Image 1 (tube, rainbow over the protein chains, first blue to last red):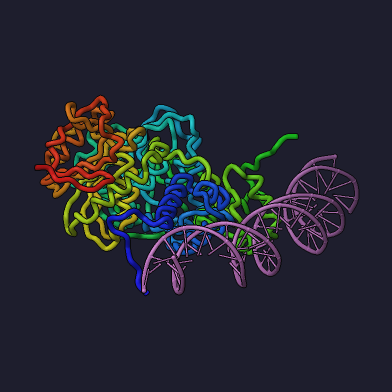
Image 2 (cartoon, rainbow over the protein chains, first blue to last red):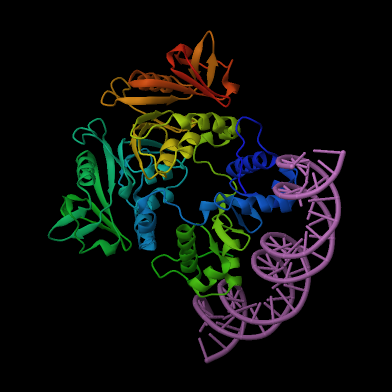
Amino acid sequence: MQIEHPRGRALSRKEARLQQLRDAVAKHKCLHVRDAAELLDVSEMTIRRDVYENAEILQFLGGHIVFADAGLHRPPYDLAHAAELNEPAKRAACAACVPHLKSEETLFVDCGTTLPHLINLIPNDMELTIICYALNIADMVVRKPKIKLVMLGGVYHAPTASFYPAEEDHLLGSFAINRAYISAAGVDRQLGVTCTTFREAALKRAAMARSQEKVLVVDKSKFGQVKAAAFAHLTDFDMLVTEEGCSFQP
Amino acid sequence: MQIEHPRGRALSRKEARLQQLRDAVAKHKCLHVRDAAELLDVSEMTIRRDVYENAEILQFLGGHIVFADAGLHRPPYDLAHAAELNEPAKRAACAACVPHLKSEETLFVDCGTTLPHLINLIPNDMELTIICYALNIADMVVRKPKIKLVMLGGVYHAPTASFYPAEEDHLLGSFAINRAYISAAGVDRQLGVTCTTFREAALKRAAMARSQEKVLVVDKSKFGQVKAAAFAHLTDFDMLVTEEGCSFQP
DNA sequence: CCAGAGATGTGATTAAAGTAACAAAAAAAT
DNA sequence: ATTTTTTTGTTACTTTAATCACATCTCTGG
């Protein structure tokens, strides 16, 4: 048996239907078999067969059709599985930051898997300006209607889901930041605050230099950890926030 | 009746469970009641009740728990509902671009709802460098493992899901682009190629100026349309691609 | 410690989704 | 045109999910 692919001629009924189906699912994100059958004017059984024959694209989820990758593997950022670690602690730390937020301020928000929770927790009616350089942060900020978002561009670095500019030097020169929310991969009393890459460290330093107030947001599992790139001392921060709350620096 | 929210003390069993549940769903994107019940060591019924009581966050989809917004409203970009218009035509136009792609090239990809399809259609093993300034484009590119992504940052503009820099002038000065894929909101024989905002027009022009080859990708519904910001003539493009295929310029 | 409200579990019941087998229709090939 | 193959629809059937009512348990405040 051999499969002939149609070239110039019109698509077969089946192919056309499948394309329509994909479009409909893309549009609604989730489509019931019943509705799909009505929409494409075929029986539910036919819809089911179409989906099964294209299991790589479409999938059933209890009577509804969704894209196949929805439930399985999602590799948007390499962060995806690192995000799972200590999530409750990370969210708790971010929750402790929320009471200190003030409308009309300009904030810098660092990359990583901690601070997206902070964005999530910002009240929808709060007017802020947020400067960031990580794609996962931007993706969250965009969902907040009243926030003005500034993205520092550059080359994408998948492990941190961040963009790093050609020259960090006077990148932030035109910004004045009220508060910088900085995350870290390690906090050590002797070796200071560290992260994994040097580009990241440079950007963090640049942001801190242009900020009135510096806030370090980490869950306590980071204490005692040491990573390659040191970017600050604990005393450089005005506030330290963990899942146990805020502590002001002397 | 009044609801007391726990402050300092430990969370109630129910609250803790709900948090765990949210985390688990965030992690797996889609979790079966049976697994959730086993994971949290409660009965399926309890899981069901938890989900119903938090209908704003979680939702059932045929035995599986997913985030509530998955099937209903998703307001990440204002584009979301404009994207539905002429989707098949847009995808077809992008499909016609695919055969011309060459590995190792540097491409500029414009904003809008047309070109995300192009990113989607790029083979996973093709090595490219893509320069963009729209969040929806970046979100797609990130899913392609072999593509190097460069993002031009700036202030976010929701209607186009794009970032516009402080000064467009010599923004692209350090880039040399093999091919620029440009979209448009209007194509008119007399008034040329147009889009809705002037910032966007400026960026398109800048990209075209730094590109070897300029490709206009539009579905035919754009023909005859005229929008406020003109940025090029049809003759400025080396190729015009619609759902009916490519046409080379003389 | 005990009363009472809220939370959780259990099993029966109902509704819905998934499957299989076969008949009918359409398309392709001869 | 007619045979063959593919596609689609229908029905009955099996499995799974959702709901309900009630019993049990667990906190909390007096």
